[in-house]
Image 1 (cartoon, rainbow, N blue to C red):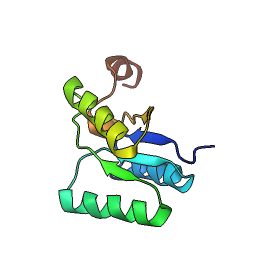
Image 2 (image 1 turned 45 degrees about the horizontal axis):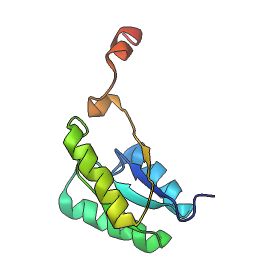
Image 3 (image 1 turned 45 degrees about the vertical axis):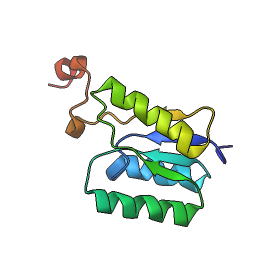
Length: 108
């Protein structure tokens, strides 16, 4: 069902995001990774995922607080993955500082 599809997975250079990216790649989904970290380590991760799962894997370091960088990341995913449409899977984690303000009131 996911074979040949494409997805952007934010927060995918480690942790839960990486687990989701690996699961999608295992199902045959091409990936655009996104997250922070050491450039050499991210490149090793990108190449390893592509080799292990035989899918296209790109990386874009877009800062999700900057809309123009998000647009660039989507355009790169479409270009690099050869996709006409890309699903975006965004992980909002406390550690990333991206949680909606109402969570603060609810989870005190």
